[in-house]
Amino acid sequence: MDGFKNIEIKNFRGIDHLKIDDFSRVNVLLGQNSSGKSSVLEAISLLTGMGNPDSPLNMNRLRTRNLFSPFKDLYYLFYNMDVKTPLEISSELFDGDMRDLRLQLTYVFDEQTARLENGLNGVPPVSETKTFLNTLCMDFDIVSASGKRSYQSSMTANQEGIISNKKPAADYLEKNTSVYLTADLWGINLASQLSELFKRKQKNIVLQRLSHFDRRIVDVDILQDDIYIEFEDVPEKLPLRMTGDGLRRYLNIVAASANPTTNIILIDEIDNGLHYSAYKKLWEAIFALATNTNKQVFVTTHSKETLSSLNDMLEEHIEFHQEMRLYTLANTPLKGHQAYKYSFEGLSGACENDIELRGLV
Image (cartoon, rainbow, N blue to C red; front, side):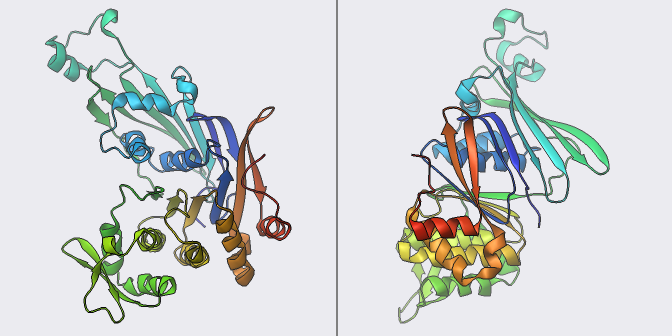
C-alpha cells in the first residue's frame, strides 16, 4: 500500500507536539472540538505539497472558505502564533522513505519587489524597512535507500502582503497526490473529478455506488460543465444542485475515492450533510474503492451514529478489519496532545458496551 505509516507534528496550528503511529488504509480520527483532527489532515496535505509554495495558502483558503488568503494568515500556521519556532512535520512512508518538512517565516530581501515598491534600483533596504517577516520557507528532506536529498520551496510577499515571488522546489517531483474534502466540500471541482473518471471509462464504478445510495439513480452526466443526475421515472435529468446536499456529499467522496490520479484522500467531518441511513453505504464505498485503487484515506468525525455504522459495515466485511485504524485525539493536562489507537476489535467492543470513544471526558 502507498501512503504514510505515521506522522509527527510539532508547532502546527493548535498542536504543540503530536505523534500518531501505525496508520492503515482507512484511518478515522475522533476527538472533541479543537483536539487537532482537522490539523492532522492539513499536516498530511502539506506533506504531499512540499514542493509547491502555494500549498500553505491554499490550505488556509479551504479552512477560511475565502478565495483570497493574505500572507499574514500564514502566521496562524504556527502554534500560538510563535513564528520564531519553525513548525515541523515528519513521516515514514510504506515504501520506506522518510520525509521531514520544516516551515519558517523569515525576512528575505527581494530585489524585484524592492524596485517596484521603493524605486531602489536594487539597493538593499536598511534594517528599519524590515517591518515584517516577508518570506515563508519550506525546507524538506527525503531520505530513501539511495540517500538523503534536500529541497526548498518558498514564497515572498511585498509590503501590502501580496505574494510577489514564488520558488517551487527545483528538481523535485512529488509521488503522492492528495485531495482534501472539507466539511462543506468548498473548493472541490466535482465536474473535473467525474470527467477524469468518465475519460478513463470508469463511469460504471460511480453508477454502481450511486445506485447503492439511491436505487432510483440510473445515470450521471456532465452537460455544459454542470452535473446532472437521471432518476428512474423522472422525465428529464436533474441538476445535482437540485437533488440535495447529501447526494452531492456522497458523490464527491465516491468520485475522489475512485479517481486514479490521487492516492491520499482527506475527508473532514465525513457525516456532514448526510442522513444517518447513508453512513453504512458510504463506509462500504470508501473501503471498497480505496482497496481497489490502492488509496489511503483519512477521515474525521464526531458522530456516534457514524461510528456505529462503521462497526456494522465492518462486521459484514471481515476483509476490511485490518484495513481500519481509529484514533481518539486529546489534549491532556499532563502529557499534552496524545493519540489513542483502536483496531476493529476495540471499536466493536466500544459499540457493544456503549463506551465513549470520541473524546476524553
